[in-house]
Image 1 (cartoon, protein in one colour):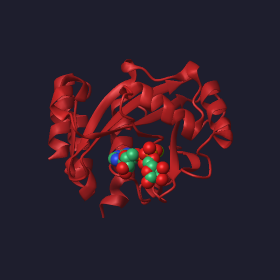
Image 2 (image 1 turned 90 degrees about the vertical axis):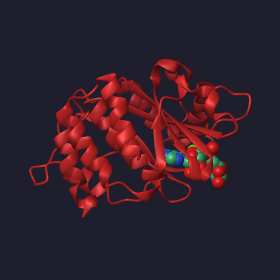
Image 3 (image 1 turned 135 degrees about the vertical axis):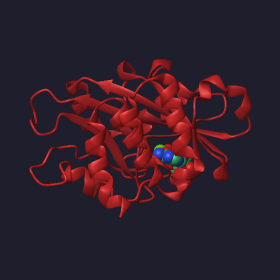
Length: 226
Ligand code: APR
Ligand code: MG
């Protein structure tokens, strides 16, 4: 099961405490079928086992907000896709390309990522193996400066795939609210439809990169679980 493998992976990497592991486990237990079918693994250490699959690479791009919005401590980029779902920018890696080159090409086409912000191996987060569609989906995470992040948001309107594959980039609503549950915007956001296991990817990175406290992510996920 995807959740157990993921938790095992985190334990090995010692990246989150056992308290946070329990919360992550709880959230993963309530995941969608598509996400449950996906297996999280460190592809870079198992490359030779997965020859013959299609490969895709997607990116979690975020920044810490300095002053512009006191309620929102981080900005995380997602997009409305051509198929009506929410997902992360990126796409299929072409034959002959390595993962990072394919990702950087897709990010240039979809959101106009500049060469200065290109992804490299150090930004690799992990991969999901989707057996039912023979897809290996690789995931990268990069933190930009607030200035670079905002510039990138503005450039998306001029890039090749705008209005075709990319129907709009969005910021994930991570603002704190005086209402209960604490992360009101995020809890509503989780009601949308996500491509593949993009909601899982969002949850995992929010927790693992300490963008939000794990308990708050859990609070926000309560509506989705019901
Ligand atoms: N989790 C799991 N799978 C995902 C995720 C995700 N977060 N995001 C995308 N996928 C899957 C998609 O379902 C798709 O099968 O990865 C594959 C490739 O991702 P895309 O971003 O859709 O690929 P891209 O190269 O940008 O565009 C695909 O296919 O149908 C055509 O017209 C469409 O031009 C588009 C092309
Ligand atoms: Mg794409």
